[in-house]
Image (cartoon, one colour):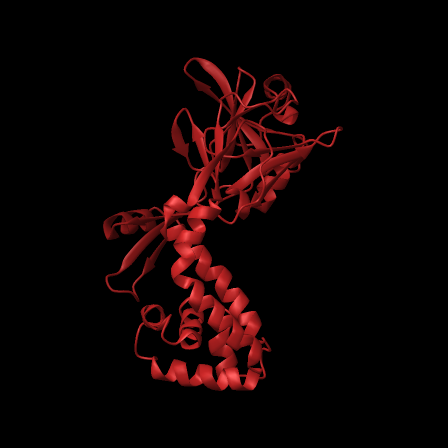
Length: 326
């Protein structure tokens, strides 16, 4: 993250004028791009730089007395919502959105707050000021940084709160971390799914043999018969007794194959019975596995080590504790 090197920011702070109306806000590059800047502050006796990009709105519930007082002072960022019961009074603010802090040790610390701490624009901004790319990857746990070097070796790094990356261009982490993934133990998996073997076999055979019209007629009858009950529980009870009925109810409960939409509006979507079965089998097997943690074996990846996408997710461990990936 050489664009955020401490010496560079320190030089800008000493040679550039701060933005009008401030004493500690400076441009990172083009002065006209005034949403990409940094703030200078003192921390434990040393100068540090808070890097910002973009803006965020923040709302705070206040009392009626606070609302009346602030309105009397002419403030326009407080609003009353009297159509609700009880009445609500809210203050809207535009706080500085800090992406990270650069300290003299030569590292950029990720410390953004909020559920949507790094949006698409912020990730593009971070990529422009560093080597590699920042992006979100749901099958790798969330926000990651990745690059492929000249030898073709791919490096992947999870981005979590407190991560410190070097600003010397090497993109090295100050702290050791471990990425923990999961792999299905096939032997245990077969044991767990043993109770579903008959259900899968029979319902797959029936779905292959039925045409779509017959399947939808059956689906409508099953859905109407159980429309006042819990679909998943009903499917569990019928799994071995009536596999096709159970498959339809599982599909309803897990919202698979748009089966209810197909029954109500056959012309809107065209999915063959075997496609519904295949989709349902994937979803149901995944659910069963997640309910039996013994099915999984942990696989651990070290710093900068590439790790494959996984539907089972990842955890990041730092100093023996699990941290939250952005």
